[in-house]
Length: 195
Image (cartoon, rainbow, N blue to C red; front, side, top):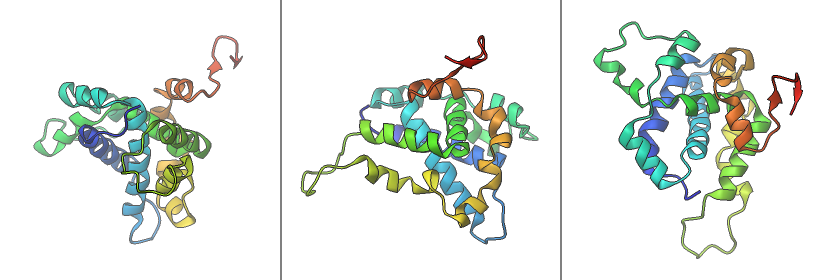
């Protein structure tokens, strides 16, 4: 994994926006919307880095486009009133797999820690060598704390966005692929047991 690429910025922004609209902030905190969106952005960022691990992958998705939100809209019941309206153009930059993986990470804190650890182990440190020690996996875990260990205020702001049952229609779309990528045991549907 070569590391995060700026080419993923439109995908991350649009996918975050989709999650924040499909699962709006909750609670009475006046900053609830911002807190929920930060959690969504962290989940989407980790998912995008896992999905497009090299600069070439990121450039290709920027060139070809990620596919859009149509299937996600239908699965989550959040279809726009006017799909082709000018202010709905951002939906073309939504990546279905990235959003599905982000939903998995938001619903499962253990899986989120595993995903962030996988990214931390693979992404090189681009800073110069003036640091007294090499970067540890824990450093990146701290940067993604809102995803992996949200505080009560953050959790209260994102009740809908973190509810496993509400996220399930979106999360199940590509959950097995994420679990396989992270080396987590995937249930075998044919045997009714873990395979």
